[in-house]
Length: 148
Image 1 (cartoon, one colour):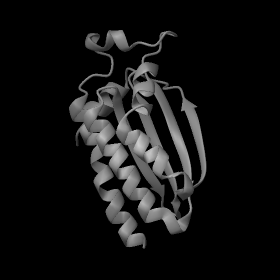
Image 2 (image 1 turned 120 degrees about the horizontal axis):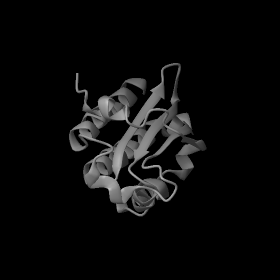
Image 3 (image 1 turned 30 degrees about the vertical axis):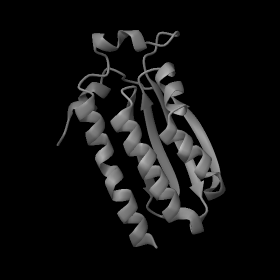
Image 4 (image 1 turned 135 degrees about the vertical axis):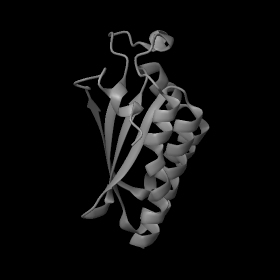
């Protein structure tokens, strides 16, 4: 089962590269309209998810679909980067970065997110969404521009 889980998660490793290729600058003038009302541009959070072990493979498939489609189809999604804890494969962490609060809200309304959200509740033992504040929002440009 763990080998299958690794195979399901492998395509997700391309997500940061896809985000980098689709976003050469997080703070460019072309995105000035995306700035939030509080002056911050980005919405950053970490989703801490515990999956019922018997549903792990199905959950990874659903997460793979929503992650890749979100990065590919939504200009407001900068990054969706899911990971598994090495010592506990049913412990999933997802770093999510959106250009603005509006981009995040638009993401929640997409068909691919709705399919994920409606299709996975029985698979998830617990979910905690942790809002984060980037310490160096400008420095994130270097991270997303670095490809090697």
